[in-house]
Length: 295
Image (cartoon, rainbow, N blue to C red; front, side, top):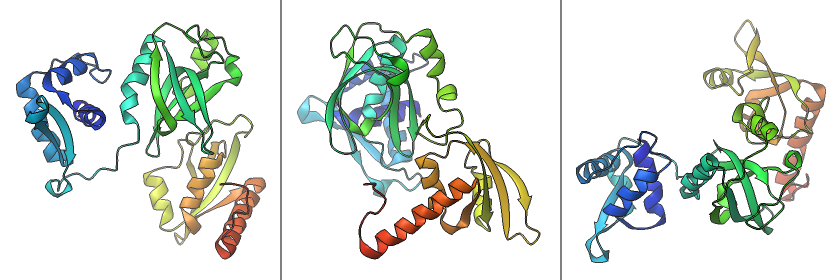
């Protein structure tokens, strides 16, 4: 399966000969077992990819026998996938930079359309809500020397789809011991819901009420690892749960996604914040304007 997703991502970028595919697979980060790819195995994998994903890996004999990808949903009646995250092809290079302690150099565009040059010392990647993110330390220098940064103030979490012209600076720039211990998925995202890590949002003990049948969904797929059921109404109308986390924007969005199936009981400040968001949303629907200052 690892090869299938790797090949699909690779052929989305460019057409390649079998020899080029074999060579790239030999050095691919996804090839954790250092497997060799031969012609017979490759053609068997092509058939499996078509059967599982409805994606044809075809050979263009008029273009140097290069292989390319063609999606054919009619052929696929076994598996339906979401569209792959944009710029997934960067994943191999980012993982290689992490492994070899290289810097990444690229152009980055913010949600407001502002473009800037970035040099990043990557620590790890995360997949969340159909997006790949790279988390690392932004370097203040733009040159090969990788000027030092105030690491604690320069941690960034950047989605792949806002990155372009990615390149590696192939010279070791290891993270400091302190930052290496801090920038692990477990430590960095401790007490966080999703992709946001916001030190200015304190960790809260939160109590929510989920109504039937919504509580079945959040018991099957908990909102957070800290979720605990603490009360159940006798006729099954609702159940109450506690969570301990930072109520960042993505957590509030998750609560809103459940609609009136979930309400916040405590803390009072969060309950009032949710009420304020809902009031402003109602006003926006009524007059077609954004009243909360968000784009």
